[in-house]
Amino acid sequence: MIPDAFIERLRDSCEIESIISSYLTLKRRGRTLTGLCPFHSEKTPSFTVYPDSQSFYCFGCQKGGSAFTFIQEIERLDFVEAIKLLAGRVGLELPEEAGDDGSSRLRTRILEANRAAARFFHEQLIGPGGSEAYGYLTGRGLTRKTIRTFGLGYSPDSWDALTNHLTGMGFNKRELIEAGLVREGKKGIYDQFRGRVIFPILDLRGNVIGFGGRAMEDGKGPKYLNTSDTPVFNKSRNLYALQAAKGVKSDALLLAEGYMDVIALHQAGFTNAVATLGTALTPDQARLIARYAKRAVIAYDSDSAGQNAARRALSLFSGLDLTVSVLEIEGAKDPDEYIKKYGAQRFGTLIEGGKSAFVFEIDRLKQKHDLETPDGKTAFLNEFCALMADISGEIARDVYIAQIARELDVGKDRLSAATEAIRKKRQGSRGRKQADSLRPYVQDTRPSEGRRTAVDPKADLSGLAAERGMLALLMQNPDYYGEIQSKLTEKDFADPDHAAIYQALRIKLEEQAAPDLALIGPYLDSRQMGIVSGLLTSGQEVKYYREQAEEFLMAIHRQKTDKSPDELGKMSPQQLKEYINTRRAAKS
Image (tube, rainbow, N blue to C red; front, side, top):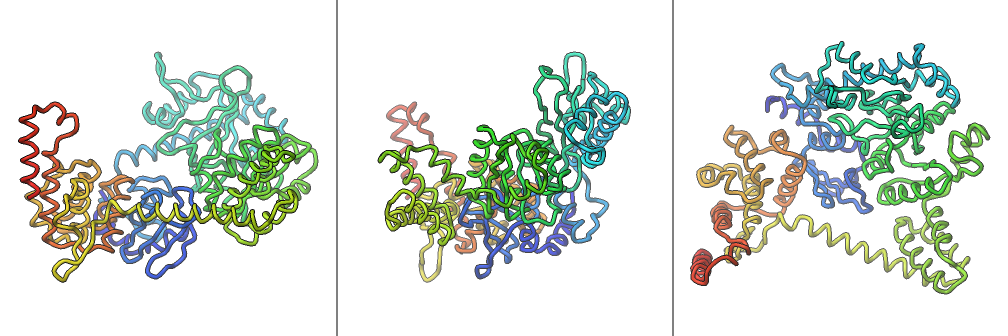
């Protein structure tokens, strides 16, 4: 466990505003900062940073926590790894007693095994046994330099060539299975990748986190096989070649469909190309692109499947602060073939003339509806206005509306009014959603005997609300813990997350430490840190007093005697009468 003193020192060296602003754009609003949440798609900023408490909270997806929590979430690291990363950034050396837990050691071993496997695969490719695979790659137009740059390899068509190589280097069975390099069968472990061209997948720090493999023979398993999710790899949260593309002096990322497209684009000079990893674009990948680019250019195949995939990708980009365009690759099936036929210069011109996301969608709607009929035209205009409501820029919205009004001979004012009505309805809905997001954490506030109180004493406070109130009270007034500790244990909490949070607070309070987000972070998971951050946020608006602790305690203990509907249904009339009288007496 990392000592609290070091965590506090690191916390004081890492201003949360500086940490988060290196990943996303923040705008100051008084004493807080806001931005578009990197953890879910949204158009109206609901992600808020609180420098005073060194915390963040998203009113949309309820994620929250400290700077350490943010790094854990954004980089997909555990707590210890997040601490190591931030310590390295600010030049702090971890103390010797900062032990490494089992999960961190396993991650390290997996990365080492992947690196060794990548070397093995590359050696097999350039050796005599890899001539067929090497010929396939050069036949696709790849140069020796490109093959070496991307570390391409070949997995022999053998059950245990890699297994024997890695076990001979000291890696054990569990490490290789967890890495996704081998599988376990009735006769032991065997290679996951066999008889395939290998594409190593790297993370942003240059670690080999997984592999993609293309079959050399049709019919021998799937055409492409990717590493399954492991402790270091999740295909829905990574992008192929992003580690190379993010360093390019360009404000755009070029999104292709597969490994070979990306490699061919890089070889042709378009080194800002990336691709998904055997899946359709995911929300996490869309947000990842928005972190490293201001523009996304979708360069999918020209067939119907590719264009449908482009449309799905556009829907994921729609809530992000990103300009998106779609290439029309006419005369070729994909970017690789286009460049071979027409050259890199013409492909560059194609990129500059790509359709904007809205033009692409408008054209799709035109193809979808018969504009020669009244019903078809009406359906098109309804969907068009809904699409226009997504455009935040008033000028761009006005241009598109004016163009369609002229094309279909309809009143521009009518289209503008319909679009504005949709926008207002959506904004109202978002506002209500944001206002509701913290309601479970905030008690009713009203003046009582000249002071502000957070609970109406006459209210029938629910058990879960009381649990949240107790946790918020302790974070705001840790000195009250001495009066509570003998009356409350984790077992008294009905909600497991609340119980875990109370246990983390109790550990620190009994150590005479402050219930700081950074200090309780090692004990809580992502969801629980979000709850704590929400409570901390609500605590800035609500003042809790000592007298409320007893009210919270009574409500928490009372819920243990409450009966479920099933239990009430099984009671006799006399038992039900006695239960009701007991509940009435408890309220009086």
